[in-house]
Length: 264
Image 1: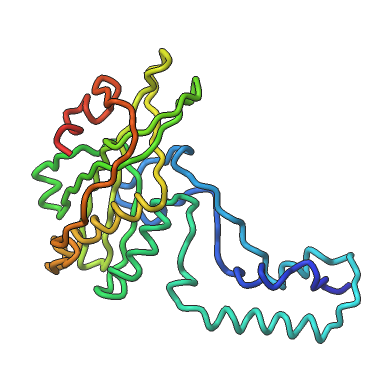
Image 2: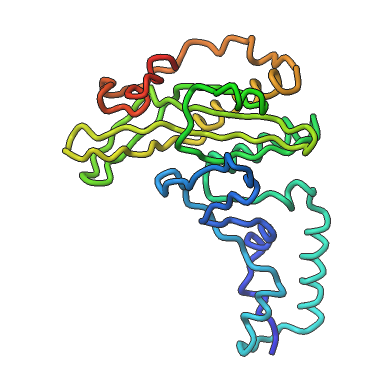
C-alpha cells in the first residue's frame, strides 16, 4: 500500500514540525511559584500542524494510489532535510495556544536567549499582588505592573465591554546558576454591570497590546536582571492612543477592590 502524496499539499508540508496544542503546559514552571491554570477565555485558537510524511504514510495504509516507492522516499528525504535546516530555537519552540505565552517565547528567544544565554518562561498566577514580601525579594523576585486596553464578555448574559484600565501585574526573577528566568503574570478581572452575576470575567487582549506590554517587561528584565539600559525605555512613545470605553466602575474592578488599580 502506498502513501498518497496528494493528501499533503506543499503549503501544509512547510509547517511540519511546528506544534500547535490547544492545552497549556506548565512543565517548565516546576517551583512552588508555578503558575495556576489559565482560563479558557485567555486562549486563542491555533492551527493544528500538518502531519509528517511518515505519519501520513501510516494513516494512508489501505488507500492505494499510483505513487511509487521512489517518489515516497524522495518526499520523506526532502521533509527530513527541511527539518535539519531549521534553527534550533524553531525546533524547540512550543506553541501553547495562549497568545501571552507564545508571544513571550518568541520575544525572549531574540531579546534574552540570544543576547544573554538564559531561557525565560512565563506562567499565569491569579494570586499575585503588586507587593513583594521580604522573603520574595531575598529570592530575587521583582515586580512590574502595567495597565492595558482589553475587552470582556460576561459568561452569564454575554454582555461585552472594553476597558483601558485593565491592571496587569508581573513578578519576575533570574536564577543565574540555573541559567533560566521566571515570569509570573496576573491580569486582573472585572464583573459585569448588566446582570446580577458576581463572577469576575477574564480579560482578552489583541496581539498588538500583548506585544506592547511584553516589550516593556523585557526592558525591565534587561535593566534589573542584566543591568542593561534599554534605549527604548527612554524614548517617548508619542501621544497615548484613544479608546472608546465605558466609565470605569471601581466596585466591579478586581484590582480596585484590592487597592491596586489606582496605583497602576
